Length: 152
Image 1 (cartoon, rainbow, N blue to C red):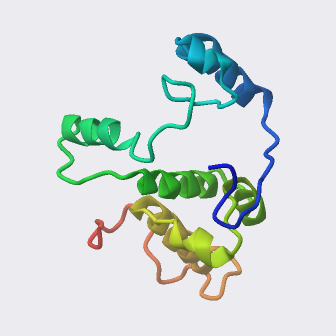
Image 2: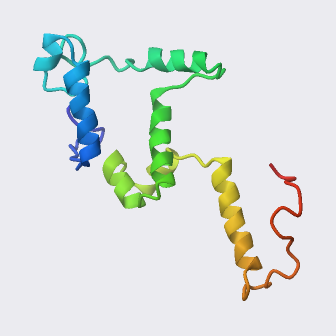
Image 3: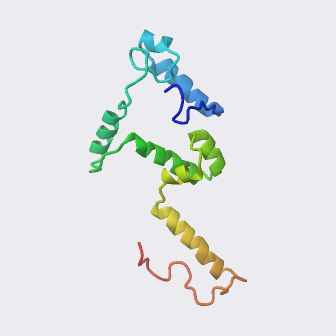
């Protein structure tokens, strides 16, 4: 792809750690002369663009090794990136500038919320009510661990 679906080119400022990883990749993973001579960062053996389905086989092998029982597609990597950005508490505007998503709706489309995030959010709400000076002052709420988890 020479441009994105929106026909725009994006620049991303990378930290030194990412640049070190990319240098390692260029120095050790581009083995064929055609790859080393290419302007592409991840060229095919011929030095040109890779096929759109290049990740299908490795992702299928990983799913099989994990005995996942589901197909993993490259689209899943978009969701993983979005979820990792959220876990790292990166501002949504910054996430969109890195991913190229133009709208919050597209960012939400490629996001998933896991059970740990839900538990953490619910626990924060409960702490509001159980904190001294909170609306209920914690008078009728059990202390952590007094009840077993019933909703999991």
